[in-house]
Image (tube, rainbow, N blue to C red):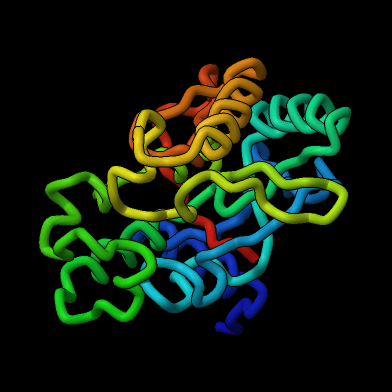
Length: 227
């Protein structure tokens, strides 16, 4: 009997699905944030080497930021308000694939790998990263409505001084840390006020981290790669 070659791709697709392997695409929930907010500055740290691991992170295959449409609309509103003061946002991370979270877990288990310790966690023993909550099994970033960002001066593109760098593991990154200058405290307050005004909530431990209060997805942790 003559074989129908046209059925092969369909059969292969069925086999892949039955094995739990599915094509990964960008869900309708998400938008490319730079296209949604063209004036946004992007510094996707996990796409390069300037991060606490010291090398590119799995799943970050392009210098592109994705965020849920609802969070992007809220952020665009905040950006427009800031522009009246010659201020804007620089984004370090937003949607984070689950494979990247898994990469962090693998790195945290490799105790001897401390290439970026001096900049990002000088006072923390790497063996304590799980216990202290810096590394976890899941991340709200993978749900699509959490973003890491700072403020910049639109006239020169420079970041406002926040008293610590992004992803600094330590008390210095806490919102209420007392050992920073009045200007640094004011800059953190400015960021927090504008984000909260436009529907985001903060966490006490990281001045850069915000999640849309009414995030459209609270259950699914996505894993499509950033391309």
